[in-house]
Image (spheres, rainbow, N blue to C red):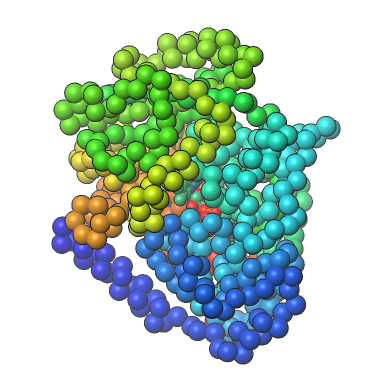
Length: 518
Ligand code: FAD
């Protein structure tokens, strides 16, 4: 529709204006970087890869890329930029795996720190003994590598994201949410200690007991207070196998009531998620289809008549010597659910296969050239009291199908989130994560960015007008006013922490929260 195109072109104009008004550091400043004594090195050319991200909608070229050889390289660089004072336009962005959606890990004409280059200290597993087991991971380490290493010790982190080719520092700067969060909380609730380079260039070790203010600030802190160079992550004994179950519902109330019952139940499943299927066709919906059920029944076999279907996704962990117990527990739990009986599918896979499931889909999409397309994703946190109203308006009305990508919908409980962190969540004990994970492979029409952005806009506007009490996750706000509204009463703390740890607003400029003082 014309209005969505207008919206899209407005965005392009805004981005173009941002480029024009961008401060370009002078040659002296850049050459002063080249004089710093480092274990790693800077590159000043071939920096275009650092101006891209998964969202594929924003591209800001940095002036330089730091490939840190040590934590001290990062500290030296930030300290140097800090010493240039308020007059310097230079900013510094840590880049994890660049899986941001709207340029959050980019730094226009600034310095991008390629965190994946930070190869040391390596992953160190503490098997337990007197203290609970944990792993020390570099901030730029991918979660898949953390998993592989800890599995060698029969251990694994407790809380995950759906996709593991993301970095430790990147997800901890947001929250890190998946189907285990109802039991263990998000990833930010499962960290014992952090090492951080602040916006002054100080290297600080922090935990709930030492420098606690910085510790909580950095968790979910959108990279605003420091660069996480190491995280100590809590571990638990890893199961060998997972029973992976999917069942379908046609009734939203039963679907969500069952989800809520499961996240509150004793001895429940180990993972509870769900997704929404609206007039499903096409290949993009299969991007998570690494699932190979023993008794495959496709959703399309149902006479859904344009109705919306809801898929509940569950897992139960087990080892080969306790298969019978697992089967009994699963049977009891499933008997309490109200899904369409003929739609029970399950498969048994290794723990690694289950956790790395989205990567299987990534490989398929890459092979078809459908991974590196724009991703106009929208991730919302919706309070339980509004979820039915939200679903009624959005599924089938605003959204007529789910062919451009999966729609996730599952509840989590606030009591597992620590309100001392910087993460912003709705003010209710149970809230839902609703992710519209659209791909935009076409330049125009259906399947274009403009089309998805228009739908996203309608959904957000509905939430605002109907007073849904929604908060955005991985929010793409561009003005401080929007961020203030997002943080609400917590803005004061966020701003105070910024002044304390990054007073010149050097860090993570791509979040567009605090413009650099200059
Ligand atoms: P980047 O995108 O590179 O960085 C993210 C932000 O953190 C930037 O502002 C950056 O400057 C800052 N940053 C990066 N590293 C550091 C550091 N070491 N210290 C301080 N700041 C840093 N999220 C979930 O919660 N649950 C999911 O299930 C989930 N699934 C996903 C699936 C896919 C396919 C994708 C692409 C993303 C998914 N995400 C999910 C979102 C993910 O959490 C974000 O993309 C996040 O930004 C992590 O990506 P990254 O490691 O590449 O970090």
